[in-house]
Amino acid sequence: MDDRTYTADAEPGETATVAGWVHEIRDLGGIAFLILRDTSGRIQIKFEKEEMDEAMVETGMGLSRESVVSVTGEVKEEPRAPTDVEVVPDSLEVLSAADTELPLDPTEKVDAELSTRLDNRTLDLRREAGQAIFEIRSEVLRAAREAFRAADATEINTPKIVATGTEGGTELFPITYFGQEAFMNQSPQLFKQLVAGSNVERVFEIGPIFRAEEHNTPRHLNEATSIDFEGAFCDHHDAMDVCEQVVVAAYEAVAENCEEALEALELAEAFETPETPFPRLAYEEAIERINATGELDEQLVWGDDLPTEGEKALGDDVGGHYFITDWPAEIKPFYIMDHDDDETLSTGFDMMHPRMELVSGGQREHRREQLIEGFEAQGLDPEAFEYYTKMFKYGMPPHAGWGLGGERLVMTMLDLDNIREAVLFPRDRQRLSP
RNA sequence: GCCCGGGUGGUGUAGUGGCCCAUCAUACGACCCUGUCACGGUCGUGACGCGGGUUCAAAUCCCGCCUCGGGCGCCA
Image (cartoon, rainbow, N blue to C red; front, side, top):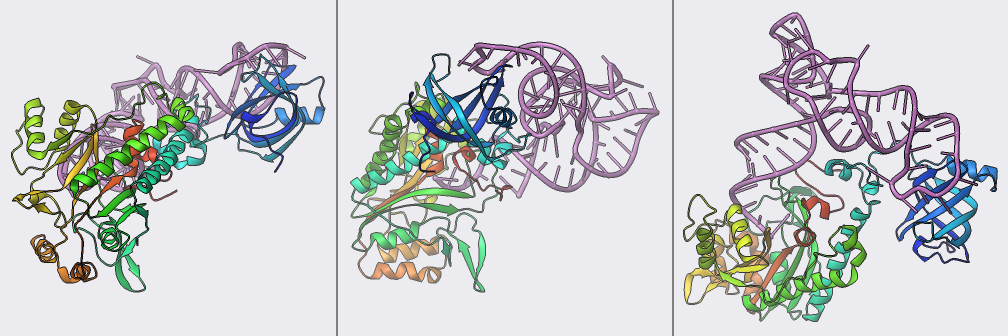
């Protein structure tokens, strides 16, 4: 198919072969128009029935929507055509005929529910808006990688099949590993720390995480893409700086390189890169501001985790991305370091979009004694994490890092209603296929 | 895990006890139409998630199951 021309590249005056899907056929009687769609756009094919090969016209007029065809003919300038050019066909080949009844309508004359769309993702991605989300997602990941490289971080890949969980917190998917009990990893946390403790120093990973929580919300997935950073000789302030850089780089790249996709999503006008620096609110200030909004029935007190309603009230109040820092030590995991001068305060931070939490991070506990105490305080057996704690005996530098929900980044960036829109084949409480 | 709300032609919907052998759009089939661009016109095919119950009468009320979505908790 070397000689195939994208519909967007077809130039008047040349003979070209275009190939794609039958988007629509408008048969006006003596003349008919076939709208052919490919990844680059659409082009009109004109059929003048009295003047063209009878068999070709018959084949063309008999095509069902979404059939795949290849058309060769002269490309002509034509002001009456939708793109100002049209193809006058010499030959037409049907590469794959489609059933006449489609499970969803790629021309978008009729809506489809998310569930129907996910069951028929291939057809769903023939819609401009469907394609646009994943073009943008790809750009977000490209830009994030570039920003990490600019921050001297090395891309790594850590195991997804593990012997023990990471933090004890969320539920894990159990699997059988050659007769041994094993789990799907919920986070690269421990492994990226082990690499940050090497000469590699600064690492990032973009990969899947698995969480077996039976939640059923528009912002949770059981298989998600985590964008992780960990850097040796970094404190939580440095980690927040990198976080901000990566998120802003993603927005900037999308604004610059995804104009068409943003237009397809009707976001071209409204799209804005968040302003930096993101405000950094101490936890204490955050609960005070939430209380001051009066949105909550009960006032928050020191030590409370932030309820969803409170996060939203604060998000509306702040109006953009922001960090919450200096959490009470007791509600952050054991591997997060506490402040030197106040053990009740953690160096843990969250980065928030007004709609939801995007990032969780902090400076890590690199002192082995304290780390082991932390395991015990959280009811975990340090013995089970020997592979991890052992390395803290051989020179573990101070280090910090964070994890960013990739789908949440795309979802909030594009103002999607449901996080499943940002995953090709989402895994949720009830969906295991396709 | 707890709680709430849905499931009607291929798709998206109207219908909350009789007006329904079920509305509308789109798709599909047939016919007409030489510049459409949501092409238009005429005609036609096609559906009440499953099982049980209440009632003279059930898409509509009740129970169970299946299935989808949402809220909370928790989190990325």
